[in-house]
Length: 431
Image (cartoon, rainbow, N blue to C red; front, side, top):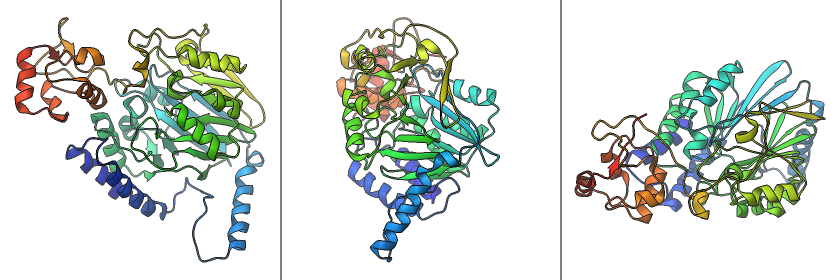
């Protein structure tokens, strides 16, 4: 069934349909496919979601109560330490969780780093990972799904979760194909579902349904190990944080990974008040051009008297817990300060960059050209036939291997490609 669903995704990409079009039809197909997937058994999943059956209400309530008790009594199952690695993945996200349950090692990944790096893959090898029980991809932007294809190739993976949204980028296509070609199970979780992965409890907080907006539909989960909870929200924005509050009975967590790399688009004060974290962690690259972390997010966390850590300052951050208490260690020390964004205030809300591709055989990089894989929105608009809307679509479709690949953009045909080449402003940089 996984193969049927991902075959649809791959076909969707190959016929050139953009990720933002036909959203309603896509959601309908995703729902049908998801319903079929949910009928399959999985060693990883153990959901306590309410299902329709022919039993009476009393039996349903009794079953639900029993399952709720199983999820809430995790502390009795914890027999070993959980080690959580907030990996220093530059301007990307990747978190590794490792623990033992009933003498069986477990490994879970939440996001897998950027497309043009190998730091997450290398870190997994350094930690002697060979088998991954569950990979959760919050959303299909390249700084969250980037190294999935290589991970699927180099490690044995039991199960992969996607939100159900697709993207038109080559990075997403390679990742989807890698999952398709593997033996891993595939699932699209929804808010309200709960799962057990050994002694780790996972409650899905978001999304409840898909809107087609990639950041906004980020898979967000609360993970519980014994009495200690950790919260992950991908790149979800403040509006989605407020939705999580409304639909979740207990959203409190000891450790919160800040949404969207510490951007002002996330970390609503009401969300922080509801979660009541003791520690907040963000993932960002040193000197990144998005200006992460933003001063608004920093101030919100500090006003709430929450300890703040960031991978740009502290490197890889490791939390170790026995299910009752936890300790935090960092690979380096420093002082967190707001980032320096050289562009407009809304820059961090634009699609992420997928930086350097393979060298273009037809046009190489020069100091005077506009590198379509690295240029800002404003720089891209200087290229003939590339206005504001096409510039944003271009960024979302990165990386490109050649100028001819700009034909993926709506309205850019062979004649306009020739105009762009003749103008000589656009180029594709080498590695």
